[in-house]
Image (cartoon, rainbow, N blue to C red; front, side):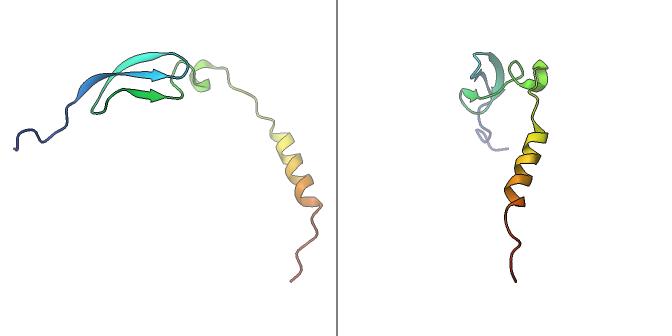
Length: 71
């Protein structure tokens, strides 16, 4: 095999916008992420309720008032 063919695999710090940092390994430098397992709603159990009924009503009001397209 050729020497120096593969990139350097090193330990780096990953920083989340919530302030959490953790160490992992990568070929890149430092990584900055928006969401991590500490602040993601799936892992925290603090999921927001989405008002789907309100979205459906808004959709119906928006497109019910338009007249049918003439051909």
